[in-house]
Amino acid sequence: MVVTEDELDSLVAADRAAGKRIAFANGCFDILHAGHVRYVAGAAAEADRLIVAVNDDAATAELKGPGRPVLAAGARAELVAALRGVDYVVVFPDRTVARLLERYRPDVHCKGTDYTVESVPERETVLAYGGRIAIVGDAKDHSTTALLNRLREKS
Image 1 (cartoon, rainbow, N blue to C red):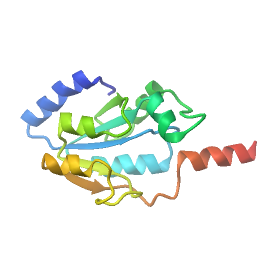
Image 2: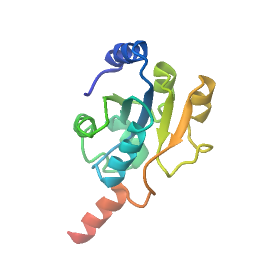
Image 3: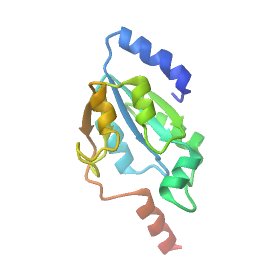
Image 4: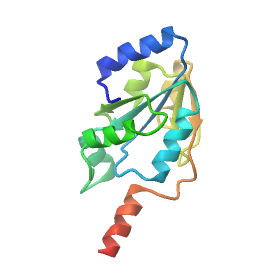
């Protein structure tokens, strides 16, 4: 389900009170592909509940460049929420998820295989509150950018 940050506060508090472990993943998720599905599945396997944070339109444009995002944040969030294993989706305006990690303090912060535990941008934030980092998903041999380029070549 797609929720606001304030709604997520209550949901995370209830899950923690019930003894649930929380995993956290994030990304732009602009045009879902198999790599996104595998990343989310890997993240979901790390805990009892999975929060996925989706970059808003301005942050996605800043991170991905001109012409992006292809899909608006609301649509991207809805698609991610429909994936198996995803419990909560929140749209956020920041370039990194450090602020959200500090706010929700998930047990495990999941990143894709284009990172190592040492190269995760939010590493210090996660370690500071006692969380764990997991690298999940398959090899990063696909991307939305590559998919869009292939579509342009075929047109």
